Amino acid sequence: MSTAMNFGTKSFQPRPPDKGSFPLDHFGECKAFKEKFLKCLRDNNFENTLCRNESKEYLECRMERYLQIPSMFLNSSAYCLSAFIKLDK
Amino acid sequence: MAVLGRPPWRRLGACWGWWGGRAAALQQRQPPWRLKSTNPFTREQEQEWRRRNRTVLMYVAAAAVGMIGASYAAVPLYRLYCQTTGLGGSTVAGHASDQIETMVPVKDRIIKVTFNADVHASLHWNFRPQQTEIYVVPGETALAFYKAKNPTDKPVIGISTYNVVPFAAGQYFNKIQCFCFEEQRLNPQEEVDMPIFFFIDPEFAEDPKMAKVDVITLSYTFFEAKGGHKLPVPGYN
Image (cartoon, rainbow over all chains, first blue to last red):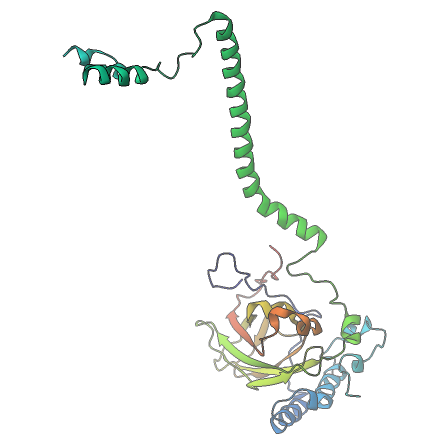
């Protein structure tokens, strides 16, 4: 699907997301958690490893508000969000 | 000028006296389609050989044409084969959620993921990433945000697709959830955060072709969707 007309080179094939599309947060219910996460990123020079707590909180907020379909975690044996965001040991 | 009346392979004898005669004798060959042998017994054999040569030539020509045809047919056939067996291309084994649980982050390989946002000219949304870059390691899930605002006074439906540069790194870029390939509707003056939850496959660190890749750029583009028109999810088509 890439627009570069390169014959023979591997072109990029976009893949749909594994767990589907995020339902949009139209009412901004989890905005505070998002702001916290972004602030953490900015403070830590955009390092993802240091802000995993905040991202976990954001996704938990979404799950609570049913913005996130918990079925995404149903397949996993742990049945919980922490399987996806492994907090640093 | 009687020499001009002779067939061309006999004309040389007209010049240079004795030498011309020798040259003419050398040149004095039969026209190509006449059989070489004058003996009636060997003549039949020669005809047989000629017939066999012609059949061999026919077979060889058919094989050559068959090869050319097969090379054209190979492209859709290979694609069909890949679809049934799932080798190569878009479907890579091991994208199950248990892989996400068990994968181990490769801590010594830090990759900078930069974000880019585009809109199609006909879509009047303000679409931009909320962070310019993020440093991740392969095997670790990461969250990133984009923001979109509909400044018009009509509800607009948009649909987006993405691109990863360098292309070869795109196969390691796995999105767990995002907002792409589905219609997203924004009401007038509505502003919404669009998250992406992704990770980079730990096998990225083991690929020798990716040894020099330190920056991956993720680029999203929004298009306007006519209502009810479902964008075909890109696959191996």
